[in-house]
Image (cartoon, rainbow, N blue to C red; front, side, top):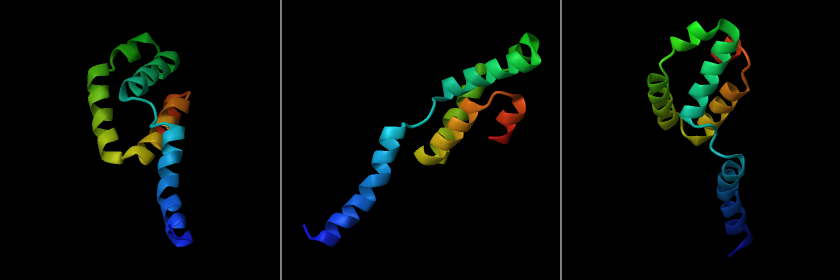
Length: 91
């Protein structure tokens, strides 16, 4: 393998390695559970009970499929780091 071919191979592999090390982000189930907990903490049990976990999971499974791993990882990290309803909305 020439030096140029090796450099191109590294350029292609590096982003995949970063994703493998960083993970693929939280699952739709984890995201929904976190959102419910944030709403419960901030707005109370009644507001949290209004949220349909099943519909939430379906919505985020679709989003995960549409965004791709890199965008999903960023999005899910934002959600999981959010500690308020306003912070969730900003994601």
